[in-house]
Image 1 (spheres, helix red, strand yellow):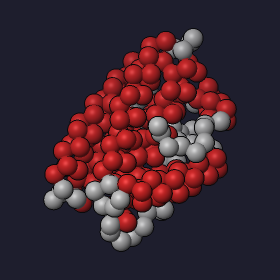
Image 2 (cartoon, rainbow, N blue to C red):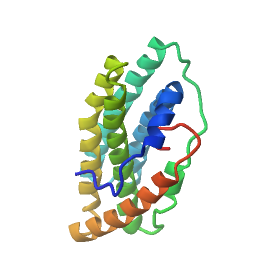
Image 3 (cartoon, one colour):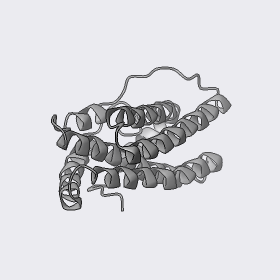
Length: 193
Protein backbone atom coordinates (compact mmCIF):
# COMPACT_ATOMS: atom_id res chain seq x y z
CA UNK A 1 0.00 0.00 0.00
CA UNK A 2 2.77 2.47 0.88
CA UNK A 3 5.03 1.72 -2.11
CA UNK A 4 8.16 1.73 0.05
CA UNK A 5 11.08 -0.46 -1.00
CA UNK A 6 12.57 -0.73 2.47
CA UNK A 7 11.69 -0.71 6.13
CA UNK A 8 13.25 1.49 8.74
CA UNK A 9 16.12 -0.02 10.67
CA UNK A 10 16.84 -0.28 14.37
CA UNK A 11 19.34 2.55 13.91
CA UNK A 12 16.40 4.96 13.77
CA UNK A 13 14.86 3.51 16.92
CA UNK A 14 18.14 4.18 18.73
CA UNK A 15 17.75 7.81 17.70
CA UNK A 16 14.19 7.71 19.07
CA UNK A 17 15.46 6.40 22.40
CA UNK A 18 18.31 8.90 22.65
CA UNK A 19 16.72 12.02 21.16
CA UNK A 20 12.93 11.83 21.48
CA UNK A 21 12.60 15.54 22.28
CA UNK A 22 14.45 16.53 19.11
CA UNK A 23 12.43 14.06 17.02
CA UNK A 24 9.24 15.62 18.34
CA UNK A 25 10.53 19.06 17.36
CA UNK A 26 11.38 17.76 13.92
CA UNK A 27 7.93 16.21 13.62
CA UNK A 28 6.32 19.60 14.22
CA UNK A 29 8.48 21.07 11.45
CA UNK A 30 7.61 18.14 9.15
CA UNK A 31 3.90 18.85 9.55
CA UNK A 32 4.44 22.55 8.87
CA UNK A 33 6.50 21.73 5.76
CA UNK A 34 3.89 19.22 4.57
CA UNK A 35 1.23 21.95 4.74
CA UNK A 36 3.55 24.29 2.84
CA UNK A 37 4.21 21.65 0.17
CA UNK A 38 0.49 21.13 -0.35
CA UNK A 39 -0.05 24.89 -0.60
CA UNK A 40 2.80 25.20 -3.11
CA UNK A 41 1.26 22.45 -5.23
CA UNK A 42 -2.10 24.20 -5.07
CA UNK A 43 -0.45 27.41 -6.27
CA UNK A 44 1.54 25.68 -9.01
CA UNK A 45 -1.47 23.84 -10.45
CA UNK A 46 -4.23 26.27 -9.52
CA UNK A 47 -6.15 25.63 -12.75
CA UNK A 48 -6.66 22.00 -11.70
CA UNK A 49 -9.58 22.14 -9.28
CA UNK A 50 -9.17 18.50 -8.22
CA UNK A 51 -5.63 19.23 -7.08
CA UNK A 52 -6.75 22.45 -5.37
CA UNK A 53 -9.53 20.70 -3.50
CA UNK A 54 -7.31 17.83 -2.34
CA UNK A 55 -4.44 20.14 -1.41
CA UNK A 56 -6.78 22.36 0.63
CA UNK A 57 -7.84 19.31 2.65
CA UNK A 58 -4.23 18.23 3.14
CA UNK A 59 -3.16 21.75 4.19
CA UNK A 60 -5.90 21.77 6.82
CA UNK A 61 -5.02 18.32 8.14
CA UNK A 62 -1.27 18.97 8.21
CA UNK A 63 -1.74 22.23 10.12
CA UNK A 64 -4.02 20.43 12.57
CA UNK A 65 -1.26 17.85 13.09
CA UNK A 66 1.29 20.65 13.50
CA UNK A 67 -0.67 22.14 16.37
CA UNK A 68 -1.24 18.71 17.91
CA UNK A 69 2.53 18.21 18.01
CA UNK A 70 2.97 21.73 19.40
CA UNK A 71 0.60 20.75 22.23
CA UNK A 72 2.71 17.66 22.95
CA UNK A 73 5.84 19.82 23.03
CA UNK A 74 4.16 22.20 25.52
CA UNK A 75 3.11 19.32 27.78
CA UNK A 76 6.72 18.14 27.81
CA UNK A 77 8.16 21.63 28.37
CA UNK A 78 10.02 21.47 25.08
CA UNK A 79 10.24 24.96 23.57
CA UNK A 80 9.38 25.05 19.88
CA UNK A 81 12.35 26.34 17.92
CA UNK A 82 14.06 26.08 14.58
CA UNK A 83 16.32 23.08 14.05
CA UNK A 84 18.55 22.16 11.15
CA UNK A 85 16.72 19.99 8.63
CA UNK A 86 18.06 16.56 7.83
CA UNK A 87 19.18 15.76 4.28
CA UNK A 88 16.23 13.47 3.40
CA UNK A 89 13.87 16.05 1.90
CA UNK A 90 16.62 17.88 0.02
CA UNK A 91 17.89 14.64 -1.51
CA UNK A 92 14.41 13.56 -2.56
CA UNK A 93 13.63 16.96 -4.02
CA UNK A 94 16.82 16.79 -6.08
CA UNK A 95 15.29 13.80 -7.93
CA UNK A 96 12.45 15.90 -9.34
CA UNK A 97 12.66 16.35 -13.10
CA UNK A 98 12.59 19.97 -14.26
CA UNK A 99 10.05 20.12 -17.07
CA UNK A 100 6.29 19.64 -16.85
CA UNK A 101 4.42 17.36 -16.98
CA UNK A 102 7.28 15.26 -15.54
CA UNK A 103 7.94 17.88 -12.88
CA UNK A 104 4.32 17.76 -11.70
CA UNK A 105 4.38 13.97 -11.56
CA UNK A 106 7.62 13.93 -9.59
CA UNK A 107 6.56 16.66 -7.16
CA UNK A 108 3.42 14.70 -6.33
CA UNK A 109 5.24 11.36 -6.08
CA UNK A 110 8.01 12.76 -3.88
CA UNK A 111 5.31 14.17 -1.59
CA UNK A 112 3.65 10.74 -1.62
CA UNK A 113 6.87 8.99 -0.61
CA UNK A 114 7.50 11.42 2.25
CA UNK A 115 3.98 10.72 3.50
CA UNK A 116 4.52 6.98 3.11
CA UNK A 117 7.78 7.07 5.08
CA UNK A 118 6.13 9.21 7.75
CA UNK A 119 3.32 6.70 7.95
CA UNK A 120 5.77 3.82 8.36
CA UNK A 121 7.78 5.72 10.98
CA UNK A 122 4.70 6.74 12.96
CA UNK A 123 3.56 3.12 13.20
CA UNK A 124 7.06 2.04 14.24
CA UNK A 125 7.28 4.83 16.82
CA UNK A 126 3.82 4.03 18.23
CA UNK A 127 4.80 0.39 18.73
CA UNK A 128 8.24 1.24 20.10
CA UNK A 129 7.06 3.60 22.87
CA UNK A 130 3.78 1.82 23.69
CA UNK A 131 4.89 0.42 27.06
CA UNK A 132 6.55 3.53 28.43
CA UNK A 133 4.61 6.32 26.66
CA UNK A 134 1.04 5.09 26.03
CA UNK A 135 -0.35 8.57 25.29
CA UNK A 136 2.37 9.32 22.75
CA UNK A 137 1.93 5.86 21.27
CA UNK A 138 -1.80 6.45 20.80
CA UNK A 139 -1.10 9.81 19.16
CA UNK A 140 1.24 8.28 16.58
CA UNK A 141 -1.02 5.31 15.94
CA UNK A 142 -3.81 7.80 15.26
CA UNK A 143 -1.80 9.63 12.59
CA UNK A 144 -1.21 6.49 10.55
CA UNK A 145 -4.50 6.62 8.63
CA UNK A 146 -4.27 10.24 7.50
CA UNK A 147 -0.64 9.86 6.37
CA UNK A 148 -1.56 6.75 4.37
CA UNK A 149 -4.48 8.63 2.81
CA UNK A 150 -2.21 11.55 1.88
CA UNK A 151 0.22 9.14 0.22
CA UNK A 152 -2.56 7.61 -1.85
CA UNK A 153 -3.99 11.02 -2.77
CA UNK A 154 -0.68 12.27 -4.11
CA UNK A 155 -0.20 9.13 -6.22
CA UNK A 156 -3.72 9.42 -7.62
CA UNK A 157 -3.25 13.11 -8.47
CA UNK A 158 -0.08 12.33 -10.43
CA UNK A 159 -2.36 10.53 -12.88
CA UNK A 160 -3.71 13.94 -13.92
CA UNK A 161 -0.41 14.46 -15.75
CA UNK A 162 0.37 11.05 -17.24
CA UNK A 163 -0.98 7.51 -17.44
CA UNK A 164 -1.41 5.26 -14.41
CA UNK A 165 1.23 2.94 -15.87
CA UNK A 166 3.77 5.77 -16.13
CA UNK A 167 2.94 6.96 -12.61
CA UNK A 168 3.50 3.46 -11.20
CA UNK A 169 6.75 3.08 -13.13
CA UNK A 170 8.09 6.41 -11.88
CA UNK A 171 6.87 5.70 -8.34
CA UNK A 172 8.83 2.45 -8.37
CA UNK A 173 11.96 4.29 -9.55
CA UNK A 174 11.62 7.03 -6.95
CA UNK A 175 10.81 4.56 -4.20
CA UNK A 176 14.00 2.62 -4.86
CA UNK A 177 15.99 5.86 -4.69
CA UNK A 178 14.14 6.89 -1.52
CA UNK A 179 15.14 3.60 0.11
CA UNK A 180 18.79 4.37 -0.69
CA UNK A 181 18.46 7.82 0.87
CA UNK A 182 16.83 6.41 4.01
CA UNK A 183 19.54 3.71 4.21
CA UNK A 184 22.24 6.40 4.20
CA UNK A 185 20.53 7.95 7.19
CA UNK A 186 21.73 10.99 9.03
CA UNK A 187 23.47 11.66 12.31
CA UNK A 188 20.79 14.26 12.97
CA UNK A 189 17.90 12.63 14.85
CA UNK A 190 14.99 13.37 12.53
CA UNK A 191 11.72 11.75 11.56
CA UNK A 192 13.29 10.86 8.22
CA UNK A 193 16.91 10.24 9.29
